[in-house]
Image (cartoon, rainbow, N blue to C red; front, top):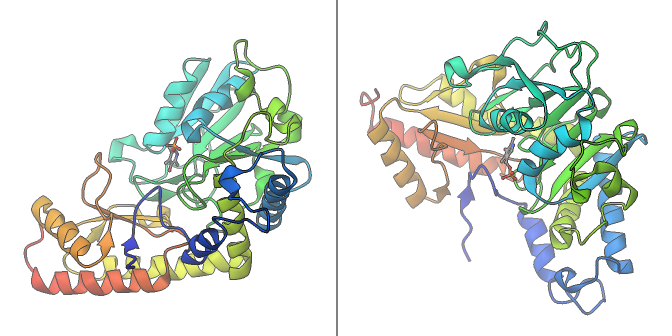
Length: 364
Ligand SMILES: *Cc1c(COP(=O)(O)O)cnc(C)c1O
């Protein structure tokens, strides 16, 4: 068996320890004589899995008692629709456009009401986070929507926007559990788990209890109503059982690492290895405003498309895979989520140094 260093943006690397644990429990989960994939979602064994997962997530994030945690399906894209359907009382949402995912959410919301783009960084290919200290927030806005870490472009909000008292809704798919966050600052936080937590197929929604109401937009499918899901403890229909189980194992792994404060330290150290090198070499450069850099997704270029392609090819031959940048930006992107070991980033930087030495003076 040989594992690679997988820098994929998602689905992405998972902790090896967790994969081994899942493998060991594959045929007989905890004396049940069956795999978690084979058991009823109404069984005692699965109830315990989902309840423990929720409890561990609450502990990790410090989620207050007045927030519900939902384990749902449909990915982030389904939330692009579920958010306006459930939260648009005045049919107004303010969106901050910091990348493709925020833009897609904004476009989706236009089907349900007035979705305002109150700020955007599209003028510079989303390479920065706009100043959000004094935005033209609509007096009737039901919420202000952000994508907190921009997976494709490698930017992150290091200060939350001033929503002028409006509810904050955040897509945290690609920074979920990478550092502590104050849930009380949000009305709703959600994320697909396939970036930093588990396998594709699960999306976690954390929603303040007072937002759970039956007054949703007409035509909102039952399955998309947060209150229905909350009342049923995420078991309104068959949930993505196996994915939830893996998330639960990852939560336990995170607790063992020391929780989110410890993860933040590790992630800062890991990202610094790469950013310091990018800032101090002659071939590669980062593409993002320094103050807005993400700890999770690090895009970079040489300035020469052919050299970029050669780097990606040679990196892959050396066991560093999925370094190709998103098709809309090109170049390279290293996603260095929680489960990417520090050693993986250190070795990537070593490899980049060798490539730099071999191609000095060829940069564009
Ligand atoms: C990947 C990603 C999405 C899309 O997720 P799906 O599960 O494919 O719908 C949305 N937002 C962010 C921030 C992402 O990283």
